[in-house]
Length: 299
Image (tube, rainbow, N blue to C red; front, top):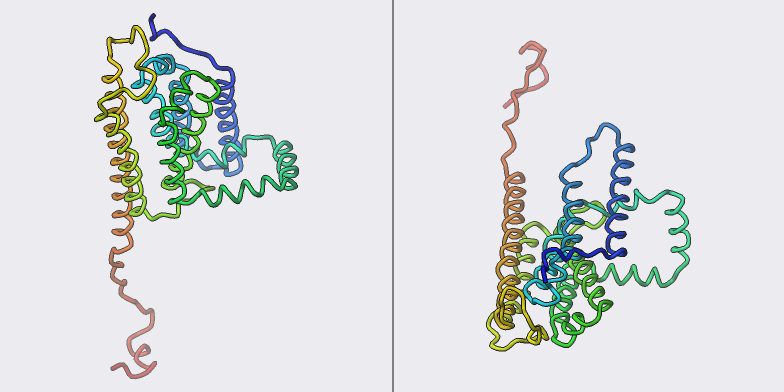
């Protein structure tokens, strides 16, 4: 079987990506029209669409079909969603932009009905509690570890609905985590740049404990061990160890990169705040010295 030609087409996934892309573009154009004369931020636009592209590659490319028979490719799929797509999407600052892309009549109707729904207020309150650094980190790590429980992981290989829920959890909880460190207009991080640096490295280290477990485990943990005709001649244990290494090394580099960026930004901010003020310019008077001295005695 040639897995590299196994591109899939899930209407729900493709429609969701296309809809997000259209709303984002419309929102950007409308914001640009409101603030005439200000150029569109092309870097943010590129980051957002790159994030959507990564989601498409992770879920619809041969990576998905290979992930059904190889743990290593399943791991690549999830890391693309959590460590690449999520931060790229947030760098595009999608919150206000996508909402702006929705027609005003629909926005008003939805907000009008939503304001009367008690469960939406409760949901908003819960989101407010979770959208804080410590709860977000805890939820992210619990999500990561729970889905790697052998029972649930094996269930995702047999049940497409559970597999879809797993992907949604990984993507949206990763968005919650990265919201704690990536600046946006709607959701502003509560942490300073130095705190973001420490936060990134601690979360990365906590996740890497799971990766180390996969690397150093001496027995296969998941039902991949029962696959016949494994691609590329991989053994089940070797596949698992490669998956652990993929989870360990690239993620370590990504979080270390975030650490370095936030440390740099923090140091730059400190330097700008501690720069001495320029010496005051000499004061010149248009009055003659005699007239100036009449104002009083100067000691």
